[in-house]
Image (cartoon, rainbow, N blue to C red; front, side, top):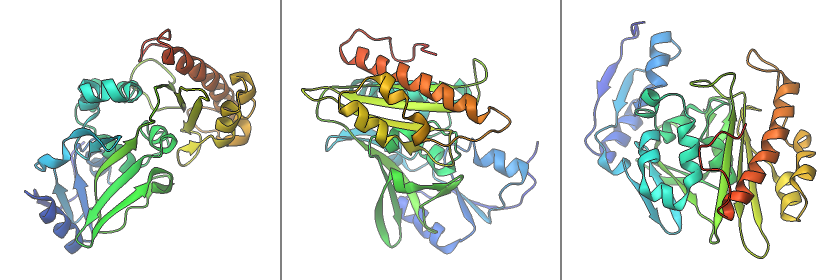
Length: 293
């Protein structure tokens, strides 16, 4: 399908130039990986007056660990995450998430930041950011802002980004203690498919272990399971925590799954994800990326 919409095109050489273009052109849209934007253009879902191609902005292509946080630039693709030694050492569960995104061809172009900017309910990168108190970094001609991930997602395809703002990256604070996680994604078949439901769990070791839990594709935005976290942090079993899933999420029935199926599978996935995270913390668990469901 060809692109039918007519629009202007700009490729800024600096971040400052990019933010100026966004300020002056209210109908502008940003092109990074383009896996969503190009599809929207072909299907006529969007009609930008200007497409701003930011792929030349080298400072947005970095993955760095500083200030005890993992920083991921707006142009970092899911393949970059999979191949990053920094990610493999500091937050290997993020590689497990990246590996479950679409296909190799899509991962080679799609960016994590583009994923959260599209903000579709079934996005893969939302639960980890919400559970780990991630921060979205935006910049405009008026200055910079830091937006907590839990406040970034306002609804299906709706975010806290204001007109004229450009997302420059995200940062994920890492726990001080040894940690291990698990990300489980339920699809209708093996291969490229959108999530019917997803569960993210992180366990931080120590005298008093701490858990972080979040769900995806069971509501308009990724949701944190705070009641479940409280249960697990109090030393209760994953079976007890599983019983709380129904109080944390309110899935719907649609063309891809029923409400009842999503709810049941989230219970199953939570229990298995907690078990996998526990085992991985001691070095005895399944390898990251291994099939658990």
